[in-house]
Image (cartoon, rainbow, N blue to C red; front, side, top):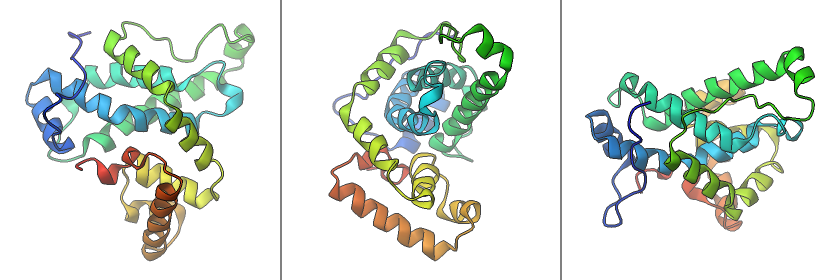
Length: 213
């Protein structure tokens, strides 16, 4: 793997995510670490919501965060900030990572060899220390645990709206088509969800809509 890009926003600046992505794509490796640290809480929460409890012995949200870092860094040249947002692109990587893990778990021979969870669906290797540190820190954040628990109490359509639009960054039109709802209904539901998140004092900064704040 290439040299580990440093993580963490400089204390005196908070660049727009799109600007960070453009600078990273232009060759500023340090910006990749800043981008990833910014998106990692959303990725962790997304994986936490997607991985069923009975599968946790084989696949952990922390592993997903670390593996997505490695995959994304290796193929970052393929990312084009002029055509797609970093969030949309990184979640495409994440979906492939999780799909591969689920397929592996569907293989009877894998579970037969690892009934005690000693083998993991994601075989991590050459993970940068910064990626490991970020994933461990995020896993300890109580606000993310509270957020995931709250999301599980939502109606199915609201839960999927929050995942697809809030975390993955799909447009409301795309979510409306996916959930077979009209655009106005999706917009109203989203605004109600934002109010409920604020009322619960949950981390609204996980959502794509506030990346540039």
